[in-house]
Image (tube, rainbow, N blue to C red):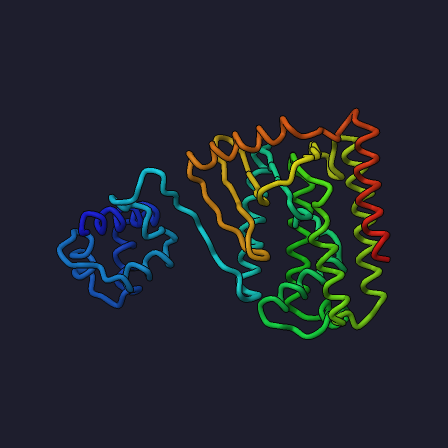
Amino acid sequence: MREHQIRFLDLTKSKYGNGLSFVTELAELLNLSADSVYRRMRGETDLSYEEALMVSNRFGVPLQATSAQAPSSSLVFEHKPISSVEGFVEYLLEIKEELDLVRKHRGQVVYQATELPFFYNFGLEHLLAFKFFAWNKYIHNVDAFEIDKIVQTESFQYVRELCAKIYRLYQQVDTVEIWTEDTLDSTLKQLVYYKELGVFQDEGAFLSICIELKDLLMMLHRQTLEKTKELGAGYALYMSELSLDNTCILTKYEGHARAYLRHLNMNAIITEDAAFVGSLVQDLDATLQKSLLLSGTSEKQRNQFFRKLTQSVDDLM
């Protein structure tokens, strides 16, 4: 056990970057003397589970990262559940940072979408407000969707500004998206569910969201045809005739690759594990080979695809 403890603290120290400062930081975190910290680093004194958990949370090194008993197939994922506006903002800031790196290094995003890619929510004011409401209702059981009240709150104003920056970054990043004919369904079903629940205080707000979705589909249709996003980045849209197992996002740039697996509303688990990412790349490549490229020359299939999606929105209005 103490060998694992030594490796865990060594890995944490290497991530921190400065040995002496690390000891000071650790002593303050655990309320210990520097000597007590050194004894734990040398394995002379056990690091309690509570202490190890505090170190893991503070420095972002998973407890299992250096486990000698972990099977070779085990993976290390990062997971930060979003349960507050502050946590949501932190999550958005991390997304913005990653997209900025992809843009600067001329990398690529591959997005396998079982639901509307969440970046598009960020570019639509009414839809973003609705998604913000739905998340708040999921977390805090908010009673009603009143867009005028939501958009005037200080927390939403900051979120909206941040989301607008993220959306602009996404429009500057080369992207491959994989959709099915059902990719829009979860958003539409969510709208219908809350409408039937009576949470929409204004019928006009519901119609405004539908109009935004139609405008979005028109924009996506255009950039699929042109193979270019609004701000000049490359764009390729594939349609899979088979159902997709899950929503996953792969970011790639200059030898760096990171996988995001979406789950439970807005949450995601994240990993840079080379073996897992490599396997995901193979799976995505296999899905692309079985899918129809709608960008460019597939005019008939492209028109049929977007006509069906647009009709599904019209049916709500």
